[in-house]
Length: 365
Image (cartoon, rainbow, N blue to C red; front, side, top):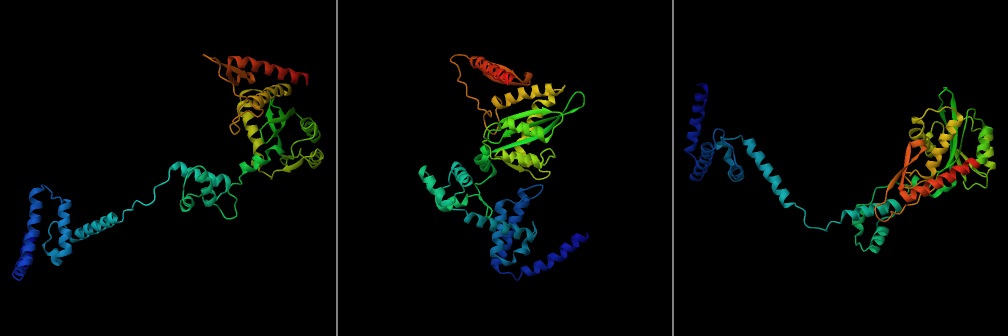
């Protein structure tokens, strides 16, 4: 009842105002009311405004100031929101980017980044090199895809490049400990080449000393050494006397920082490979048993095991030609069957003969 009374009280002033409207305004009011009635009639049970209805009210909002007085379906703020949305859509439509320059292929973008990373080149040098490949790219386009570099940093001088250029002159040595079946500890010493990850020499002892390590270095470098630097850690066995002995061999000892095994990462990775691929699967009975196991593993590691970063074995392993017809691939057990090498049947017989020759040579030594 109260709502009906309030509606009656508000309708009386509106009707009085209608007497003073002009004929044009009265026609607009009738049009607006008829439009809202049409929405109510054709959209039951709840009226829904179509885009055409919204466009009508946005146009009325722009052209007729007293539009709020005849609006019943929605709030005035809704119409304002529709107008802003239409305004954003209009400017988005007229701001579409034009055709501009044609995009360059993804392969060219990758090639630009590769040239800049591998050589430290800038845009003009890369443009000249691309022109030799028949690729025409503008300087500004190349500059857009150049990788960001820190001030004072050489982008192409990385550790991979540094070690590749100096790997032939670097060797590394280290110890690792192996428990036996009788709960005693054996110490394995080894030295390997940085360039090819090749194990140059190893030995096993229960009582390591500096004098024992000196003798192993004599066996590892019997002639004039090719290596200029030998990386070692701060183990007490690697004493100042041992460092002086290494210098007399013509090799510069390079100690790692304290508690920084990553500085001798090549040696640490070899220790991890030995443990994962051999020692985690056997129980060592004694010194002779461990030496025999390591001898077989090192022979497999140097001559047949494909190193991921090298794509080859440290000593080099040739590619076997596939025989004509249907060849048979044989599985050759290595290190007591823990690992295998795969080869064509004819090449496998030659490989077995070469392995036998290497074992006989070691026996003679």
